[in-house]
Structure formats: structure tokens, C-alpha cells
Length: 174
Image (cartoon, rainbow, N blue to C red; front, top):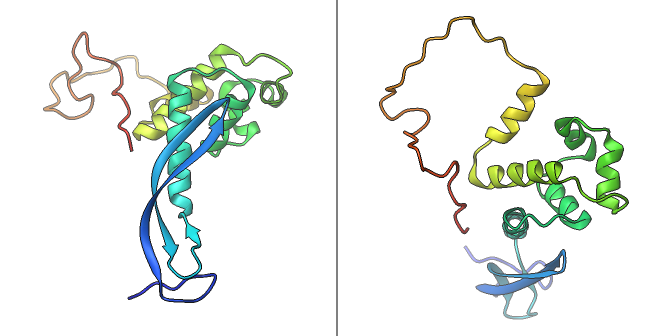
């Protein structure tokens, strides 16, 4: 089945790869992305999911570099699709603090930046331990006075951590 161009309506759509660049926090990020181009009217279309994927990769690089700026903080929160009140609740700070950090009225708190960076890396890796830890602080669970642990879980659970292992894997390039 041939695709038709949204602009001119012709059946002349070609699959291409383009280099797209964007500037975030004073850094220029470039990535090759799949797109389509109409051979007739030359319109290029990049799917929204590809743009979001590009933004997530930018967020990961900013998080790994610990870019502690108002723009960087706002970018990470936005990519995580987290509202200011939701982030403020997770950080256990008034929502005004988040607003002040993002507006550049106050320097970004390094602990808040570390939490936001951890959430960003966790989302990219598909690991949600940081978010789970923050949520359990808001609603702690009861721990029994006696807890039986099974140290040999046959490869299930913690995946056999050993001393010297890094606590989390390096994100794959997507």
C-alpha cells in the first residue's frame, strides 16, 4: 500500500533518514532520524515518536552530565512529562521552589537535580527504583518484626549483584 502526501495528496512518499539538530542548555544535539519525504512537493515529515525519542536521549545526556541549570532542570521535568506540583511532591518541597529553580530565580538545588537526573536515567533504562523509593517515603510500608530472606533466588530478582558491580547499567544508545 502506497502512502499519500498530506500536503499534495500524491503517492510519492519515500522513506529517508535525516540529521536533525536542536539546541538545549547551550549545547547542540544532532541525531539521525527516520522520516518520509514527498518526491512531488518535497515535504519532509518526522513522526512525533521519533522527536520524543530524540528529546529523551538529550535528557539522558543532560542527566549524565549533571547540567545544573534552570533550563536543564525544566527540560528534564518536561521530558519526564511531570507537572511542577507532582515533582514538588516527590521532592517534598513547596511547588514554588520548583518554579523558582526553573525560572532561574534560585540556583537549582543539587539534591533536587540529582533526583531528577536519576528519574530521567531510570525512565530511559526502564528502571523505576528511584521513583519507587521516593513514593515509599511518602507512604512507608510496614515491615514485619521478623523477615525471612532467601539469598539463593535462582537468578530471579536482583540478578546476582557482586561487590564491585556498578549499581546501574550504562544506558544503551537508542
